[in-house]
Image (cartoon, rainbow, N blue to C red):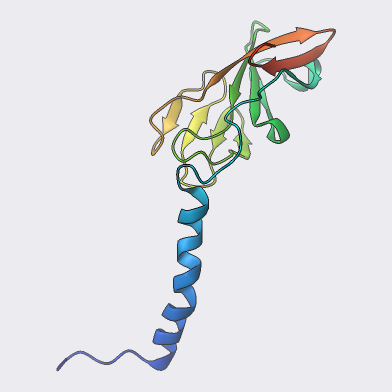
Length: 140
């Protein structure tokens, strides 16, 4: 085209090198791309009750569960599989869960969406304390 400079060889090669990598994130995080269960299929022992401070939360990556504890001492648990694209959430800042795939954020105390693109809250799990241990799952 007249008036428009041709791209340099470096620009063309850089674009070609990055093109295959750019698609990897979308494939890894697309709906149905994860085989992780959205929640434990059986009750799981997550650890000592003392691991979750009042007004705080603890992330159990190996089980895809977050447990929060209210100021009154009550516990709540949620699946940490993002409801947007089923990516396992691996980051907890205070009581905010942050999905690594697209940046959705959830409240660990309520499971509610704090930041889109997710629009559906996290799946709630049953949770109880047995002999000083936190147990969560479908039939905790």
